[in-house]
Image (cartoon, rainbow, N blue to C red; front, top):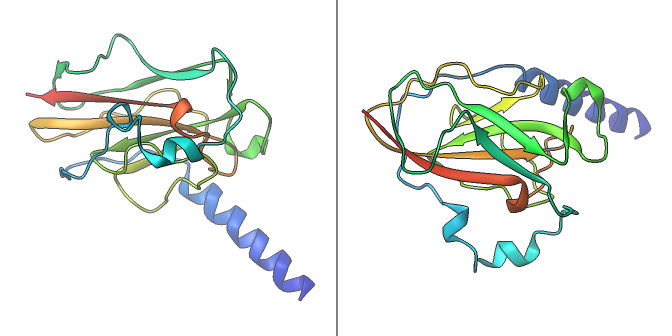
Length: 169
């Protein structure tokens, strides 16, 4: 039984490390996006138990703003205040983690929940990247959610997420 535990643990770590290294091109639009700024009264907010202190937050850098009109091949720059960006191989550290960009789906990931893997709509930046590769977005409205999570992809919740909508021309 002990060997099975070690095998399971090693497999989980390998899957996490394998899935978080890169960027993905996004080419389709899903209309099921949730904007956490519109979900302030949502029950998940009350269950968001991550310990976030005053001044800790994530942001879209380089002037990208909610409602902005942009061109495709958009490069998104990520920022964090009050926490440190670290690659996955640094392990789980207090007040540290890495970025995830969620496009046109899900919205924020509740605190304590693992950020989903295997979707081209949820891009993991496990090497500690602070910007995306150019995103190939179709013309129209798109929702971008920046989500910060720890070294095991456990979300810090809505308070360490930021959602904006952009219009691609």
